[in-house]
Amino acid sequence: MEFYLPIAEMSINPMGFLLLGIVVGTLSGTFGVGGGFLMTPLLILLGIPPAIAVASEANHIVGSSLSGTIGHLRRRAVDIRMGNVLLTGGVLGSIVGILIFNSLKEAGFVDLLVTIAYFFFLTIIGLLMLYESLDSMGLLGHKKRSRFYHHSWVMGLPLKVRFRRSGLYISLIPPYLVGFVVGILSAIMGVGGGFIMIPAMIYILRMPTSVVVGTSLYQIIFITSIVTILHATTNQTVDFVLALILLVGGAIGAQLGVRLSNKLKGPALRVALSILVLSVGIVMGLELILEPDQSITILAGGHE
Image (cartoon, rainbow, N blue to C red; front, side):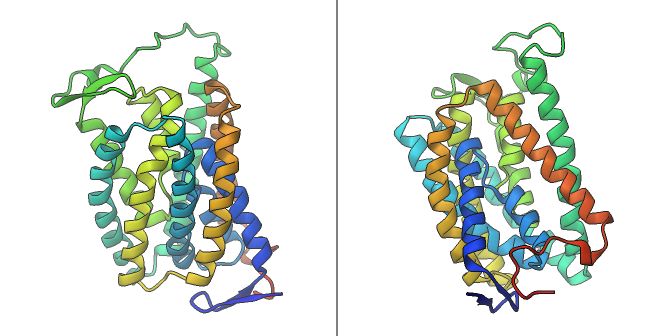
C-alpha cells in the first residue's frame, strides 16, 4: 500500500515512514532532542525534497516533544523558568530564520545549504560533545573539573536570575542567546534544535543532566509550532499527509524514549548522544559527495 504526498508529489510506503517516526520519537524522548537533526536528513536521503522535509518534519517534532515533555513533567524534571527564557529568544530567532529561509529559497540555494549546514553543525558538535563527555568520565586522563564550574564570562554577565529547578544563579543573556540561535536553526534546518540546545545547556549553562532533557523538549514544542505555522503560511511547503504520519509515530516513540532515559546515567546519555549526532553528520557528508542516484530510497516507494 502506498500513500501519495500532494505537496512532495511522490508516493511513499506509509508503514515505513510511521516506523521511522516511532524510532526518531524514541530518540527524542530519550535524549531531549526534537529529532529533526535525524529525521530531516533521513527524509532528504529517502527522496523527500529538502524544503518540504524541513517544513513537514516540524510537525513530527511538535508531537514527539509534547509527548516527551508530559512524561518528564510527571518526574518533575522540567525547569519551566529556564524553558521560558529559552523560548523568548527562540521566538525571535525563528522569525529571523524564516526570513533567511525565504531569501535562500528565492535564490535557489536552500537544498545545498541545508545539507551543508547539517554536515557542518552535526560533525563539529558531535566531536566536541564526544570529547567533553569522555573527558568528564576521566577516560582522557585530564584532571576533573568541579561539578559547579562555570565559564568565567557566563558568571560575569549582568541580569542574573535564580533557576531553582536547575540549581543555578546566572544571567538571562546566555540562555536567551542560545534560544535565539536555536530558533534560527529550527526555521532553516527543520530541527527542534536539541542537538545545539542540549550541549549548550550542559556545557555553557551548566544545567544538571536530570532536567536538561525535559526542559529542552518543553521549549522545542513552542518553537517548532511557530516554525510550522510560518512555513505553512509563507512557503506552502508543509505536506500534511507526511506530517500526520510522522506525528503519530513520534508521539508513540517519545513515550518509549522517556522510559528509556530513566535507565541511562548522565555520562552514558551524553556519550550516546554525541555518537548519534556525529554519525548523522558523517552520513550527510557522504550525501554531498555521492552521486544523486546513490541516495537511499528504501522507504520512498516508486520515487526516482
